[in-house]
Every structure is written in structure tokens, then in C-alpha cells.
Length: 103
Image (cartoon, rainbow, N blue to C red):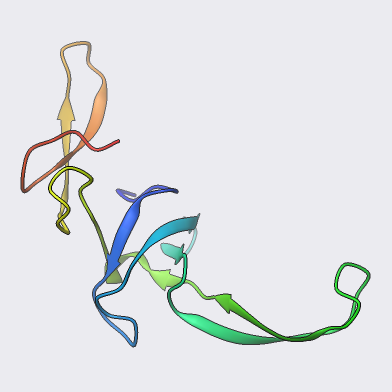
């Protein structure tokens, strides 16, 4: 997967289209990502020891990875991710727009 935990991504489709956020979690089995502050849903939580009052919680739901695009830290634009091999045969991700190596 070209998107990793901690990357900044832009949402392309859905109710939160155009919003940007940081990737909190990657679910590789279903090709989904959870983005901070995007795709918020309400969840009814039963009281437990960790949450004694229970209630309705607001949390982020997963998005399919095809609905988000990585934002380059150098040119600040949403971009496709390319692969580049360095001189020491290290494989790194690169921005297709400006050519910079993505961290």
C-alpha cells in the first residue's frame, strides 16, 4: 500500500470530500484507512469499567484507500506515489508532481 500511518491525505469522495487529515490506522486486509477528523460516525457504547457512564460516542470510521490521495509534504499538493531506487538499492516513495522523496 502506498499510504502509511502518519501520512497526510486528502479525501476525494463522499461527504467529507476536500478535507485533509492524518492517517491514524491502516487496515490492510480490507484496503481501508482511518483518517483523523474525517468520516465521523456515532457509536452507542454500553457502560463498562473503562467507560462507566456509556453513551453515544463520536469516532472516525474507515474509508477505502482509493478514496484518499497522499499530500506531498514538499509541494503541498495531492499526488500519486511513485517508487524510486536510491544508489544503495533502497526503495523509497516519491511525489509524481515534484519528484521529491516522501518521508
